[in-house]
Amino acid sequence: MYVAELALWLGWTVFFGSIGVLIGFGVLLATVYFVLVPLEESGLESAFGDVYIQYKERVPRWFTK
Image 1 (cartoon, one colour):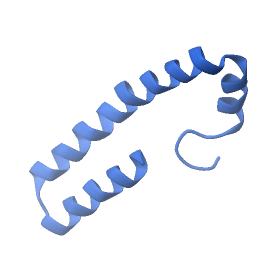
Image 2 (image 1 turned 90 degrees about the vertical axis):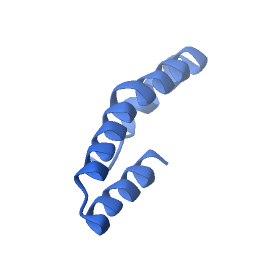
Image 3 (image 1 turned 135 degrees about the horizontal axis):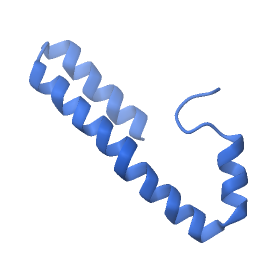
Image 4 (image 1 turned 90 degrees about the horizontal axis):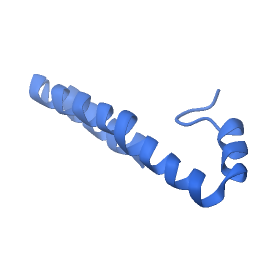
């Protein structure tokens, strides 16, 4: 879901050719990467423990390795 939202913003940047939209993309990217994903991961670690940690080691966060 995050990848799709970021791709949408990047597409808007190209379509509109706007620096403002590019800045919005950067803000969204930073927020997702540094705030939202770590919050979700810590919640999943507390809910599922070692099972989630093993899953996180096997599965890439964004794209395939």
